[in-house]
Each structure stands twice: as structure tokens, then as C-alpha cells.
Amino acid sequence: MKTICWDIDDCLNNFMFDWFYKKWKMENKDCIMEYEDLKKNPPHEILKCTKEKYLKSLDEFRPDYYMLYHPEPRILKWFWEYGDKFNHIALTGIPLSSVHFSAAWLFKNFGKWIRGYFFVPSYRKNENISMYYKTKCEYINQIGNVDIFIEDNEKNYEEMRGLGKISFLVNRPWNSSSMSIENILRLINKEI
Image 1 (tube, rainbow, N blue to C red):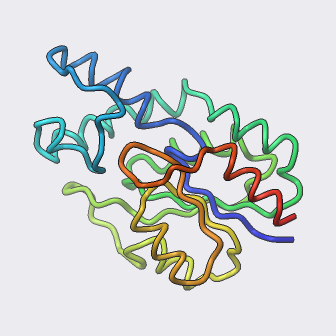
Image 2 (image 1 turned 180 degrees about the vertical axis):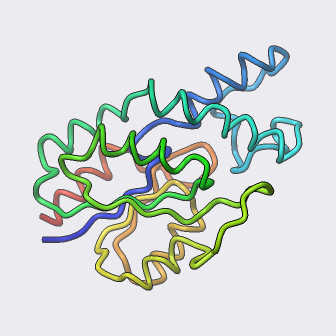
């Protein structure tokens, strides 16, 4: 049985979309941009703010998001239909202060299928944490045992392809993918 490694935010859910409309635009009424304008990640330059302000906003949003928001419906439907055909793990890049919220959300919504939660810490000034691995690729290269990788970050996607892994880049404004979630899920089904 093949193992799929899922990124959490913006793959299993719509984190940036929800953050942008439920937090950023609510607190920055003069922002005339739309989600589709977030062509870079991190988008602080596009948003005309400091990186610290952007990260602070994200981190403030995470606790409520993980308590109140739901998974991407098409992904959840796929798990109900095909989830038991694969082994699943999650690998995310978030700050240590948010890991417990993220893990609780993941297992609440996908615990029937996803059995492993791993993270590569996203750097924050106020967190002093050992960095065993600096990238998701380093982590997967160490643990091995991953056949399919699903991600929204183009750099992570390219690095995993470089390891020879079947990789899918979920279409988001900040990457070059034109592949829909439906197409990705169809292609995964061919690996059963």
C-alpha cells in the first residue's frame, strides 16, 4: 500500500483564503486586493506590510481557524471514498506555538485515515527550537517511506520531485500549478 504525505494548510483546507477574508481584510479595510492577487508566499510585500506583521496576523488566526473551520470538501469526500486505499501522513511547516492546534484539527477531521503528524518548524523570533530538519524534503529524505507528496509550496514540490517522488502541486495563486484538486485526486486514484 502506497503512502501519501499531505501538507495541511492550503491542501487539506483553505487556510490562506479564509485567513485573507476573515482576518486580514476585516482588520485592513483599505485592502482592495483579492485572494487571487496573493502571487507570492509570503505575500507581505504584496500586502504592503512587514513580514512580522503578516506572520503575527497568521499566528493570531490559527487557534480560531483550527477550532472553527472545516476541511476542503472535495478532499474530505475523496478520503471517505478512497482514503483506506493508502497509508497517510501529514507534514506541515508551521511555528511550534501552533502545532497543537494544527494536530488537533488534523486528527479531528482526518484521524480515520491519517495516522502520522510531523512538522518542520516555521521560524519565529520568539521561539527557540532545535531545527533537526530545515525543509520538508530533508525530513522525507530521512524517514523515507513516502510514495506520493501533495503540497502548495512550489519549492517543496520541486525538491520532492528531485527525490523522484510522485508529487502534486495544489493550485494556489502563489504557485504555477494549473492542476485542479479534482485532477490531482484522479491521478492519485491511478496509484491504487
